[in-house]
Image (cartoon, rainbow, N blue to C red; front, side, top):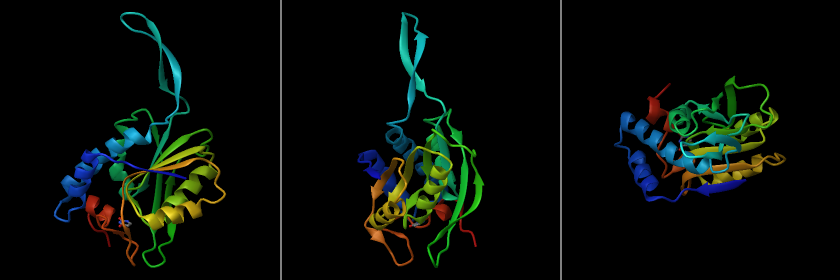
Amino acid sequence: MRTHVIEHPLVDHKLTVLRDQETESPTFRRLVDELVTLLAYEATRDVRVAPDEIVTPVSPMTGVKLATPKPLVVPILRAGLGMLDGMMRLLPTAEVGFLGMVRNEETLEASTYAERLPDDLSGRQCYVLDPMLATGGTLAAAIRFLVDRGADDITCVTLLAAPEGCANLEAGLEGVDVPVTIVTAAMDERLNDKGYIVPGLGDAGDRLYGVVG
Ligand code: URA
């Protein structure tokens, strides 16, 4: 597993406003959208392309276009949905699959409650969107799900990650032999005893969409 922490002053600036507890949902959603577009630029550095013959107003040339099969973007519901538009802005022809995962707040175990994905992901590059890499359980389960369907290259885009979560994720991916890359805007200090990232930004889903139950 490769972990890439983006270092860019604009990312750090936007992330600071995002983390601030005074930042309200409309601004929070807009900042997530902007941050994901910046992260998407790095996350798609190895997206597969194929040669494409075109003619410019001046001469013929060989350019490139996204290869087929097209990449699959997979937001993890609920909070990953807030990242979808920012990602699709850079990859408008990608397809989108949905994975609903929830973590049990006592055991911190992740379970799948909804799934809408192609049955066969053979040869597909997948971009998994989940704002918080906290314990790593949700992402490990999501990645295994995609690999079991044939995905052969997986990049996870997250806003924040915790060192413990990265270590757990790496351990949870033992035996998975497809390349996995984590692209994150920041690596925070640690997890607290409730599995929240410190200093973090709180509950990403609640800050995007409001508190449920
Ligand atoms: N999920 C969140 O939304 N926030 C955290 O800090 C950890 C998991």
